[in-house]
Image (cartoon, rainbow, N blue to C red; front, side, top):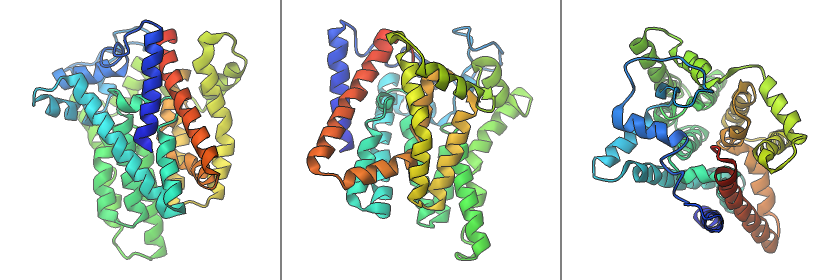
Amino acid sequence: MYAGLRLVSLLAYWWLAGQASADPWHNIGVMWDSVFYRNIALNGYPKELHFFRGDRPGTEVTQAFFPLYPMLMRWIALTGVDLTLAGMLISTVASLVAAWGLFKIGSELRGALTGTMLAGLLALLPTAVVQQLVYTESLFIALAVWTLHATMRHRWTLAGLLCVPCGLSRPTAGAVVSAVVLTALWVLYKRTDGWRPLPAIILSPLGLLSYFGYLAARYGRIDTYFVIQKNNWGETFDGGKTTWKTLTTGLTAGGSVELPRIVTALCLLALPALIIFMLQERLPLVLTVYAMASLTTVVSMHHWAGTIPRYLMPVFPLMIPTAHALSRSRLPTRITVLLTLGLASGWYAAWVPLQFSMAP
């Protein structure tokens, strides 16, 4: 289901790129975040920090990008594989692992068909194209999904161990760490699993803290990562002011050039309903905590409006009610919805870089 729907989207993207006389490979590995991952894989992190504003292209520092993904790229490149291809291989394999994990979670919660629909929905999100590009989303989602699955099954040591590389992949792993630790503490409080949750509490923060600690030790200040995000990328907590502005301006935007803002505004507008439906499903505690922690991080930060749908992509518990509803619908309805969304995802993937020249 996942691979088939991604193929539909990618074929639509490829065809649209051809219609626009554009090279569909142009943005892969040579633009946006992929440039930074390639640089880290080739050269490691620089010895010095240079603090500039993020609106000065070329001045952004690579230390804002976590090390696991470029490290894997470098290891694969040692076999002679091109770095860009290495990144795409990691992303593609990780996306399949993530889809399998979503199937497992959906199946255990609401049955195999819901699991299948949940895996399929991952392929249909507006920014799903990055799941096969040189981006970390697929790797992070795969690690997060299987960490949360292990926590659901009370496999505490495995959950803690999986959370370590998760914390080395993206800063949003903080939501995964929070979900695992809080769930383990709740189980300890209820005394339903003895002392078995302790390894999860001890292990799960180590990946995230180790990278923060590395930056602090190397550059001489404990808040190095947060200073980088604020001064070089303009990303900082603003209590949701940027999100609210994005929502209000996106809904009133005019002209096709504003399409990414409109899509972002529609995603934000749908969040309250998605949250209510998710809470009505009475999901396991670890999934609810993860979803709410992730959402809090995304909506309370200042960042470019067009990236918000990508930042929301890993919050898969929000898709569980939709997957469950699709599983109970008639087969023609499911086919129509999935194929339509697959083509729309491919169209959006082509439109943003080809017409808007901005990162998805």
